[in-house]
Length: 264
Ligand SMILES: Nc1ncnc2c1ncn2[C@@H]1O[C@H](COP(=O)(O)OP(=O)(O)OP(=O)(O)O)[C@@H](O)[C@H]1O
Image (cartoon, rainbow, N blue to C red; front, side):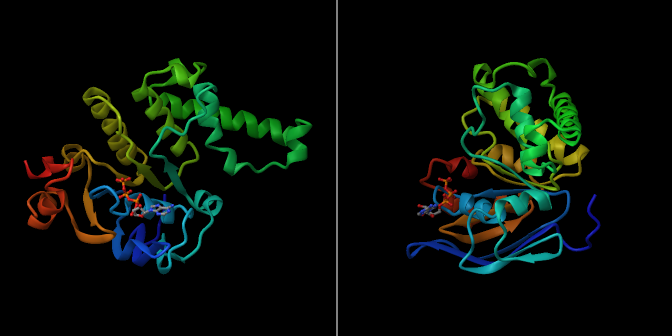
């Protein structure tokens, strides 16, 4: 459990452009410890770009990220993972020909402490680590009620179950901040409710701070403690869901888009 006094995460005056096109403009907000923070906004608003900055895939043109009190402009993805930032992806990024268990174990590969030689010759430290990784993966599968699928090839499972495996893989290394890019995309309503409940449990039971992108506003308003609304790379507004729902700027940004249900 983290003990730093300030917010878990601060985005400070961050800007990012691609060949002159501004994806994010002077964006600032804070995420408190143990909060579920939802990033919402129309297509192209800059949500995925921001997640890519948060886990070190993109480097902002200006501004900085403060994670647990430490300031970063540039943080490599490996370093982000080691510092406790876990990431799930927008499109299913699982190894579809591998078992559920092996996919979840793959989430620990960045945390390996053994050398290639130890691994190649299966020396005691490598075997010990392998046992520990398998045990940790089994523990996480139990948490997600996925143990019965441990040896199943992931590509043969229903989409909703695969998404659970993906989230399991993202948390197996015990991140303190979990970034999820549209974890409910492509699901039917029952699957959405189930995965949303999993996210809520992770937040509660594992004290996990979560930043997620989600287009289903109904779910966002129920699941999130804090909502950041982006439009054309700028922050329109942020605050608790109750204040977001009725905000005229938010409704205007959504009107005419596929996400007009926010105004309903
Ligand atoms: N790698 C890239 N190269 C060039 N332009 C990019 C790149 N990634 C994003 N962009 C542009 O940056 C802007 C923000 O895109 P981004 O994907 O972050 O938005 P988004 O809010 O996540 O959209 P969506 O909801 O469709 O996923 C868009 O104009 C997009 O075209």
